[in-house]
Image (cartoon, rainbow, N blue to C red; front, top):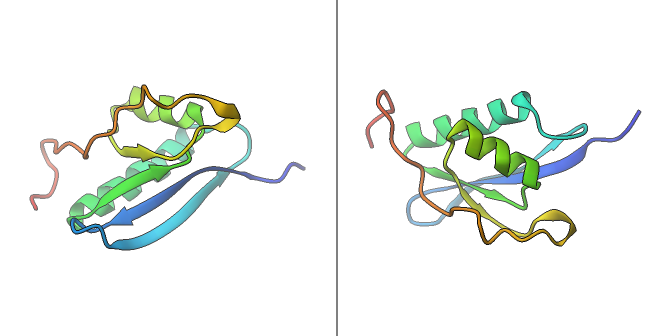
Length: 102
């Protein structure tokens, strides 16, 4: 059985930039809906607490899934295999109807 590989790091930050948490998400093979669900849940929890998440060193397939799902997160770090991340939109999370007010 293959060992899990890192798919990205997720850092939770307060508005002043203080790091609250930093975790690495691992998975078997390519990122899937379970990976997307994990990032979405972290994003929701961070928003409810008035914080933000930064996705670091994400594999390109995860960035594609996040974009497809409309989950806007700040991305940073380097792509695998020298892939260019200059096309990744680096933005703050957007508020949506039903989100907790900050």
